[in-house]
Length: 432
Image 1 (cartoon, rainbow, N blue to C red):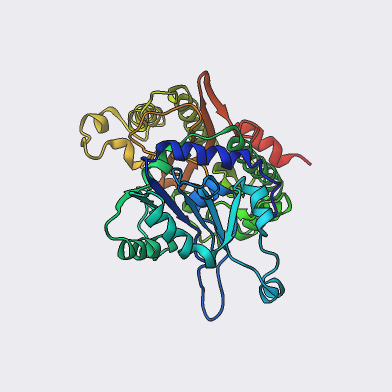
Image 2 (cartoon, rainbow, N blue to C red):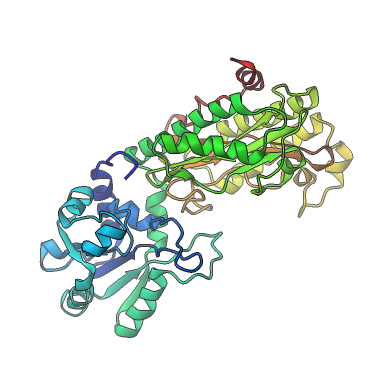
């Protein structure tokens, strides 16, 4: 485990919050993610199911959490099932959690091997007073995967085995719970942002004309790994020149040219929690006047957006206000004129030629984290703030992005220590 031990109170409290949302006579089941194959006998790096991690802190494959709050035996109201290790597994794969280690990490008293799951679960279903079965699915509004998960296989098995129980969706509950971050989660996300900050400052001293985008990617990865991160929270965008206008550019294979800007959309992962930062810097260390004018326009929009984010605000209302502010900046930059505004289509406003994406999203265990975009914002939510201007005809894209916590008295910026002023960027790039 690369990250420091997480206070198990985080997971204990998360399970208590979940139990309060379940109907009487319920059981809820959460499965770990699969280890995904590549080719032949290769596998991808394991990434735990976010909901299971949120409730247990277990970062191990073939794990199952069962919560049955009304079960007659108290010790069986929370049961964690783990893959039983043996000498062969230890030799080839290394250490797996013991039952005692799992108890200490999760605060769950009853830890059993997965070989006991079907027997125990059957007893719960037929003798434990269970009427409602909460099963988990990926219901993120941007999800479009056809990969069959352990959860989806379990759903099919459970409904066939127990067809007369009432089935419920646990995903909407988890989305509500996970949207509000506890102090423990904020600390982990701050660590991810701190690692990102350290790597960005390293990159500022590294970038120069002629360097390859993938070399810059390597500088970020070096700093991420040496500070306990497993790497990038998502595929990094290292986009120079005209590619700074490609929103999801991930080839990262060009040479950076003097006079161009370099858009860096990167973030470190730490303990499964994520940072999501965007900065745009001049390859040669100095912005041109035009680049700086566009840069400062984006920065003004970002700062104005900060004043709008508050408890009670709905994202889509907030985004519309940001769009109005952006429209004003585009007029000042002479990218739009009053005729463009007068003749614009309501379905495709004129500003969308230069600002075509959202202003932000939930952030947490997933980069595009769970949460209802139509719900009112609440204290404890973490959002990205990421306006941008993309001028394809000039090969100039500027985006700036920080991660903020909504509080009662304003925003807590997790990235306030990361350089963002144009002059500060230039000074750091030219410092020894």
